[in-house]
Length: 168
Image (tube, rainbow, N blue to C red; front, side, top):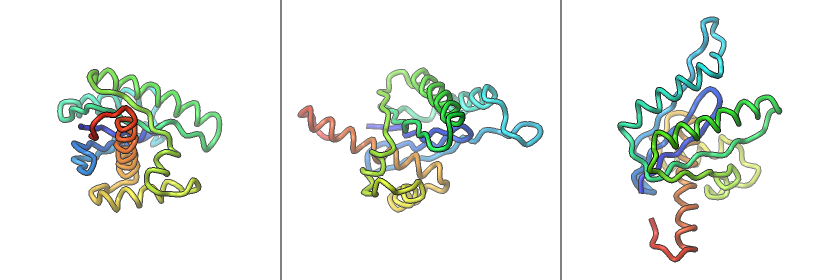
């Protein structure tokens, strides 16, 4: 089962493409361009840029499942709203681009648990665990996406076992 794992943020998206649970094929990041005054570009410009880069990759990747990490609120209400809006838009783009793929949301706490980390573990600990399994992850965002992918395979295996289906 091919899986595209996505670690969304408002300025950068981490992607990890697996062709089976233990085989990470490719990672990528999509970073929003800065505006003319080197400030981040507007939200609409960012999402249009992200959409074009995802469409570029859709020819290369054919996932059966897309796993995207849930929105995490850790700063303030304004950043939560921006990230939530970006998350919804990104989920829509991915569902449109990969119409045949199943879409699952992965909770941050589930990622920590699947990687054997404590509930207080931060993103750095997740990235270390993901890089230990997949050294090809060169950026933090790629490592975060790989951690989401590793978790998604575990979640899917657990759901399949509960339903009496064969493992992935």
